Image 1 (cartoon, rainbow, N blue to C red):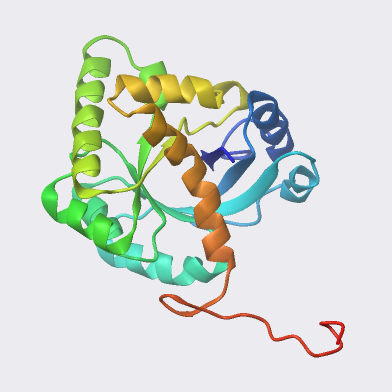
Image 2: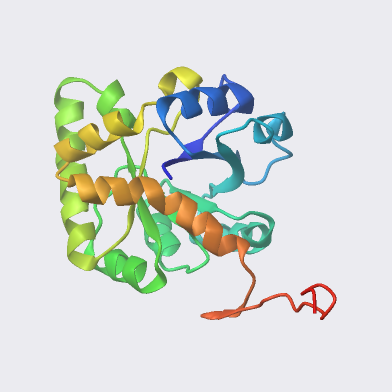
Length: 233
């Protein structure tokens, strides 16, 4: 069950959800998560993509904020509306705050080192770290070398603290998508083992499954009661 967890479609990207789903299925994915930025309107043509067989198309939200206070407010207003919530951390205070919030599923790092305090928060709150492989494709020269060094460092810290990771190429077009085997190969350049990469590709589907279930409190699931007639008694 391999998932691409950070898909941007029109109008944020250049491809429709259906085109993304068809190409992702051909490449070997079981599902994709189509992201809405701050819940800004309904995603266009999402229902058509969800009718495509052989792949699961889910909707998620990517929270973008200028400061930690507004970040908390947006998380509170959007968490119950989506089964998957990511935070795009564009500053170090947002990076730290996102890991400190257990309502967050994934933190997308805009180029910051994973230091000990946010790493401990991520472990405690079970927040995953996105390993965005798109810069490996796009960058060249010294910029690419610096990015590689940063990601290798963050991978080591994530492994040390037992932080879960997700792989993504952050596609904005169906041409940006990469097959799971290619993503695994790129992840290994960053020091991620094949087993870790496989787990990182499966993790989004597992989180979606957990979030779709009803929880009365941490560890207490609400199950629907069935009458004797429904159970065939």
